Image (cartoon, rainbow, N blue to C red; front, side):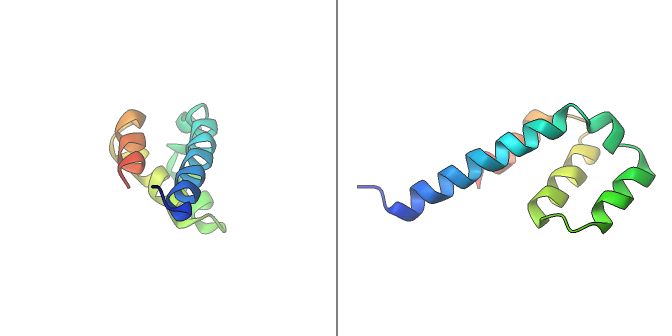
Length: 72
């Protein structure tokens, strides 16, 4: 039997992935160094910062990033 905490984590992951999907459209803009720096200086969550940095490192191979978060 699944514990409640498991379902809550899954729901949070799904919500987070939906948020990430909204950033996919704007990833070209986020790759501009100054704009990325400004975003990282703002009050963004740690996971969103990791997502942005990972997207830059893998040069928009966002499927790899999503697999990383799904595996968590």
